[in-house]
Length: 129
Image 1: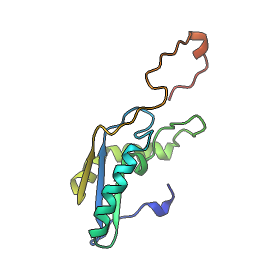
Image 2: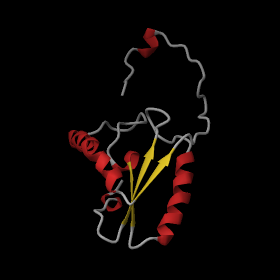
Image 3: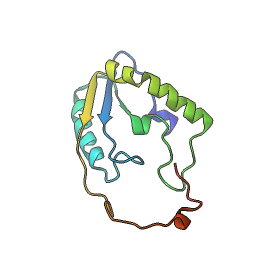
């Protein structure tokens, strides 16, 4: 996200932290189900609030591992930021004005559960994240 997407809260801001389980390792919301729910919840919160509504959602707020083939690995600086975030993330939820906890909001992912057969030769040279 661009730097403009990040802010330090001030006295009149509403801070919302979003807690959610990740369906799979690579992406927390591959079908966009959570996004729809989050938009609806935030539109209700934002309409009633003060200056700004600031949202913390781990997937967007801290550097993640690559989840698509063409994505670059995290840089050393991004790894450092990720580790720092892990150490203080509990404070984000503690100090937030509102915490949204999302559970079990999943559509089926295309090809999910399909069986694939691969030999060791097929996997040779594969990059594991």
